[in-house]
Length: 229
Image: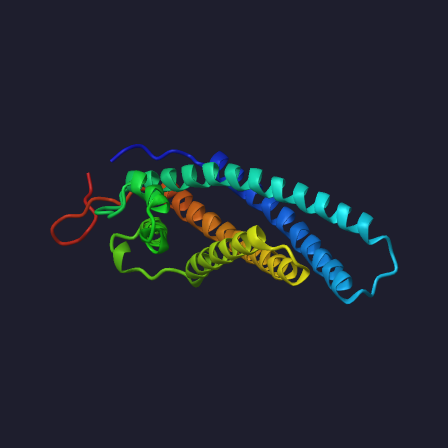
């Protein structure tokens, strides 16, 4: 069955990184809106400032934000996947029976093309339900927060791909605007995604710690009454 491991430190790291990511993504959204405004001015020719200097500052700012987002994304991926694996192991250690997804595959499905469109959600949903402490956890319902998190994940990733493709071929002002709009939309989706994942992580942690702290059930006799010494 394994031993339940206190994962408050791991959970705190996930929460910290998600909060930092939200802050950086909000800055990215504001920066993206500023870039769209600049591109609109250039396209319409309605500017009364040094557009060359403004464009140079915009490129430097957007580049720095992009690097910060990439570094945070890699750090989040490592910490969050480790947390998911540990949460799966803890659910088993606490007594959840017949879980379909192993700790390894709970994170492994993220890297399998096509199957990663639904399998990671199923694995997280199983952890959510198995962490309830109920013997009939398989029939328990999941939360709208969990479903919203996965929808936001799919949208954020789709917008990220669109943004990348548009950015790679953008040369003219209209193309640059479209790429900037897609990038900003992806950043907005990333904020929503992180906020929902925060709630998912906190709820699974709350369920497992409450379960681990609960007194063990007393054995019962054939009549369904607690046995006495």
